[in-house]
Amino acid sequence: MICIIDYSMGNLHSVKNACDHLGLDAFIGSETDDLKRADSLILPGVGAFPDAIEALESKGLAEAIINEARDGKPLLGICLGMQLLFGYGNEKKGKKGLDS
Image (tube, rainbow, N blue to C red; front, side, top):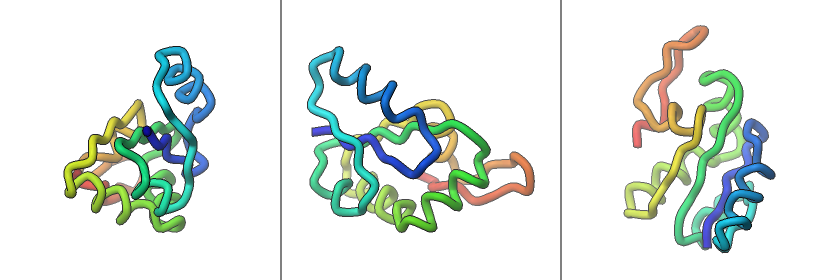
């Protein structure tokens, strides 16, 4: 089961529709428990790097994503979501990334 991570900065329904089209068992989740019960994760994203990191941190998802990835759970970042996996983003004021 795939958790499409909802942190209010991604085109979630397009990703969900793509998963459905491919016959993948996917759901949209915004809680740390959603990430834990999934077999793999998708981190979509649209917007600015610093705003996205702040949104993940404010929802407690940044640490959960890092922990799940370090435990070996497959993680796919799409667009901004992929950029968030880097150690640092220089956009705007600059911000530390997930470093996964």
